Image (cartoon, rainbow, N blue to C red; front, side, top):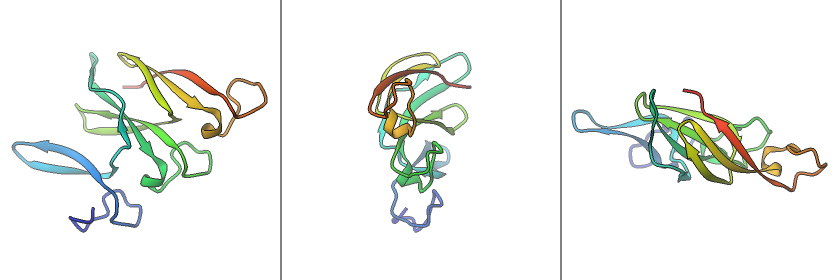
Length: 136
């Protein structure tokens, strides 16, 4: 953002790194609301309807609460559809991506990051495996 003098993700500063698409015909096009994700969790996965890349995105970089737990401290699962150039925050925290098959993904989450007791044992100390089916 600093180099271009633009606040692409609308968080009020020009300090974030961004990402976008590059075409030989049109050059680089920034995704206007995209801070650069913290990590790429998977390479593109071809499915019958699209090619999805799993990313980890920091709430603090986006400047907003992406999972509704009231803080900006979390790393959130983000998908990027390469066919439509759309990003979708999956509204769940992520510690690690442990596996993927098509639109099903296994991720590790920490209850404290989610802000709730996911396994009913009365604490927020546990790491849990979650299986998500990503919507098209």
